[in-house]
Length: 367
Image 1 (cartoon, rainbow, N blue to C red):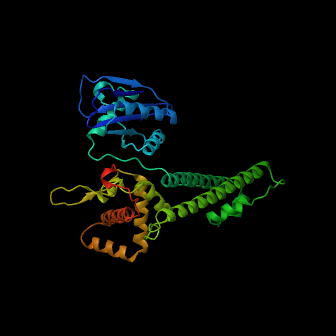
Image 2: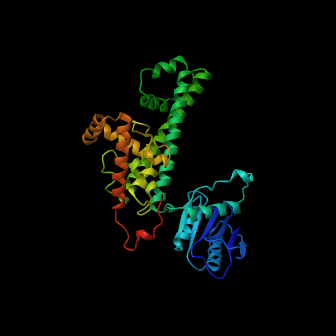
Image 3: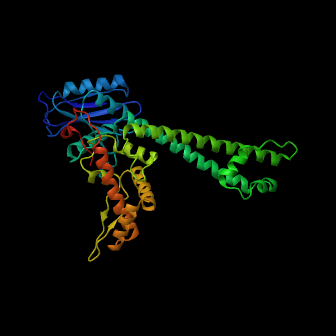
């Protein structure tokens, strides 16, 4: 469903807010200045390429001047529409899930959500540009698939350990004293033992099946990691050369950062990564507390880089020692280090090659 202002004179600033669902896309065009005499028209469109084009034509007819598309859920149901609008040269920004006022009973329709999204886009000081697809989306799907394989492998290892606890004494004696990797390799090569009782035979079969699944998942995760390493080397050759930055962390950083100009400053990038400390001072005490907001996967990558540098990089160890002598605790020094790493990564990524036609003033930026 689309609700569009139908006045003859276009508003100086107009937002077309979209609330996508798996089947439909609900839109409303909202001017910056409310005018009760403006006539509204409605239109429905399906969530496919034909429906997106119909929605775009309808918005161009109703708002021929400058307009901005406020999209909700650009990482899920709104991905296709965001890519379509970007290819059409339209300006699109991402809005968070609109809050529903409790005083009105928490009413919820796609049209009301679109109205709230439009109001949020009109009042936002720093609009968020949707993340791009292409190479970034390739990294994201590989990361998600590898993470699924790793989690499944961990669950299979736990299942194998549980089977060994209750296995017959003869089987447990064969595996006693071996490392986890050696136990998996031994169980994967177990053969049928027809002379044993049914409990022994079925336990051997369960151990072999579980161990072979673990080996398959490990091989899958390793292959995906190789693909990620190749893509990272192609997109950001200097990123893996930094101390503590491996292919998985580098891929997550590129996925969260997306493209040049998405963040207005390195402080905004650090805040998005959850690396910007929050002041928690009181009286003579001057300290900061941990920031638990932002992109937690990006924060996890920064945390991994921090731990590796603190263990292996001499310059980082000197930095932590200097911060400790200044009176900071070990955790405070680690937060300072994470903030410095976020600054270093942002500057490296923003200095990457940019297309000649990129105008930073015209790119919507993230908060």
